Length: 298
Image 1 (cartoon, rainbow, N blue to C red):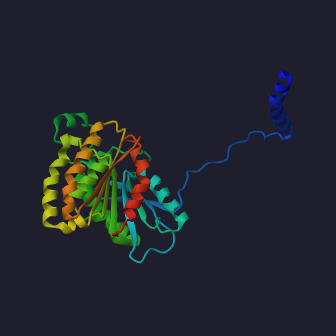
Image 2: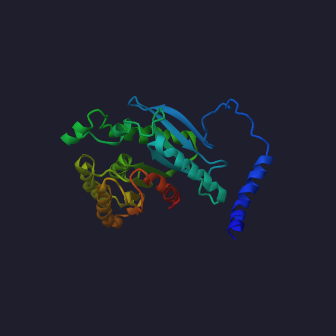
Image 3: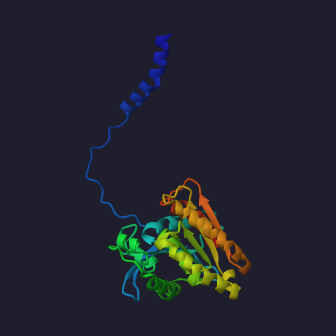
C-alpha cells in the first residue's frame, strides 16, 4: 500500500517532467528589447508658468467622443504627480459600462519632475506659519504661498482649461489630500461657490495649531447672509481608520459636527472614515467615491 501511495504521488510529477522534456528548449538569452516609459491613454501633459513665476505641470485625462451639451464636469486634483494616474485610469475604465460616468475631465496639478510629493506643495497649500516651533521644524521648506496658489488656480488655470476643453461652467470639483485637504477646506471657507464639490481627504486641520479653525466663523456668517453660496457647494471629508496622526480623525470628526447646522443654509457636507486605511492609503481607496461625488448633479 505504501508503494502504491508513493507511485500515486509521484505520477503527476513524473508526467510533468516528461512533458517538460518533450518541450522545445528555451531560446538563449539575447539582449533585452529597448524599453520606453508607459504612456497613459487619453491623457496629455503640459507646463504652465504662474503669474507669480513658478512653473506647474498639468496632467489631463479626457474622454473620447463628443462632450455633453453643457460641457464636461472637471475634477482638479492637487499633488498631481502622486494622485493623477489613479484618478485618470479609474475615470477611463468607467467607459466600459457606457453609462456616461467617464464623461468628465480630470486635471492633475503637479510640478516638473518625477517626485510624487514636491517640497513646493507646502508653500502652495499653507498660509505663513505662526507657531514658532512649527516654523523652526520646517525652516528649510517653503511655506506661506497659499494666496498666490489660489490666484493661480482660480484666475489662471481654470480659464486655461476652459479655453482648451469644452467644460461645464459650474460642475467644477477640487480634491486635496493631507495638506492638500487643508487647502481644500480653505477654498471652501474663502471662496464658497467657486467649486461645486470639494473633497478634503485626511485634511491636516492640526497644522499650525489648528489655524484653519479661525476661518470658520467668517464662513458661517457669510452663508447665513448668502445661503445661495451654501447651496452651490458640497463638501466630502474622508479620513482613514488607521491614520498615523490620530488628530487627523478627531479633528475631522469635530469639524463635521460643527458643519452640520450649516445644512440650514444649504451646505451639503458628509464625513466618512475608511476602515483599515492609513494616511498614505486613503487617496487610493477614495478614488471611486470621489468620481461618483463629482458626477452627482444637481
